[in-house]
Length: 126
Image (cartoon, rainbow, N blue to C red):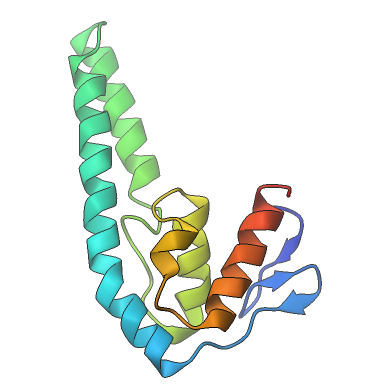
């Protein structure tokens, strides 16, 4: 995350702490996350196949793929720490990593959507 953010128990954007989210947001997040992760891993698998199908030595492709998998497996799109207190970090990580877009947050509370819109504006330097 950029310098606009302070990491603590909750994300703070330019001195404004993102709100605690409600139970409905938590339930919706838990319901949607597996689908978002599955779609993201499908995309990763296509990218991995392209690495293997590319030109070069087999050993070079192997090590490039191993490096990429090691990097990818630590992202929220693959592994998320599931707790209410991590939900804002998880959603921010999904957005920042291109796993989901703001449109994927339809159905969540207006507060959550606004907080994440603000996060993305700051993350993208808007």
